Picture 1 (cartoon, rainbow, N blue to C red):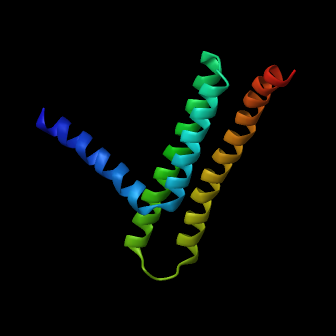
Picture 2 (cartoon, rainbow, N blue to C red):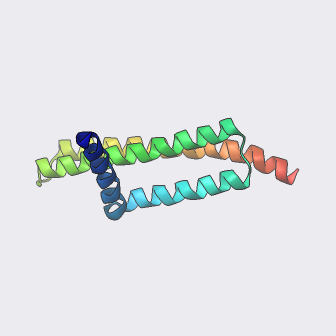
Length: 119
């Protein structure tokens, strides 16, 4: 049981580390809170809200993976290395694509609710 509790503690320690040390994560987290607030204000239906939550978690999970990979690569080599640079750019590209996807789907969902309010 202690190992299970410790594993949760380590996971929360990792989340706290990222919140404290990674500006992009904090930005994603604040935007996520704003999107959740807007979702409540627009009274999204259950399935629309589920989609929004899945997209938020997708972006945050990819940002965590990006941070872990960058820290690992920085540990492996302090020198400039084109392969390491490419790996970092690729994972950053994955985060960017998840953000673009989230914005597109989020806007499609929110526009439908804004139409109901203004029409």
